[in-house]
Amino acid sequence: HTYYSLNYHSICGIKNKENLIQKTFQDRLYKYIGGIVRNKGGIMIAIGGIPNHVHVLLKSKPSLSISDLVRFLKCNSAKWLNDNFQLEFPFSWQVGYGAMSLS
Image 1 (cartoon, rainbow, N blue to C red):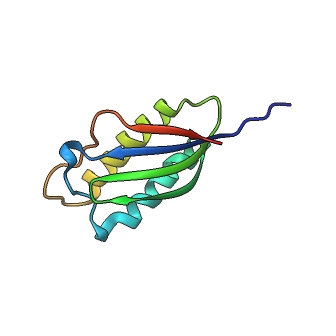
Image 2: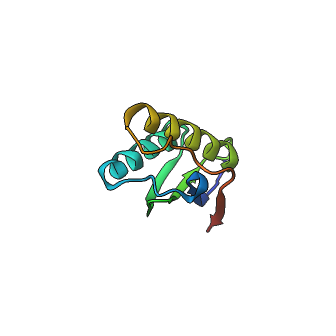
């Protein structure tokens, strides 16, 4: 048997700290991010943020690194936002992210 408990708090900021996450689509973005986490075999425990960054609390499986999961999350959510919403500026996440493991 194998036991693992991989819990992470990840923070992703918007490029140039632009305030692009609007109340009009914030909940849909959070649900979309939750779907990405689920599709990769993880569990989103909580999500929140402000107009220029997002905090995600999630569980992951050991076969998927947090760097791969965050990269997939950022790429897919940015494409989804740009394809589905007319924003003042094209949506892009900043390079890098924060991630802390939790026990």
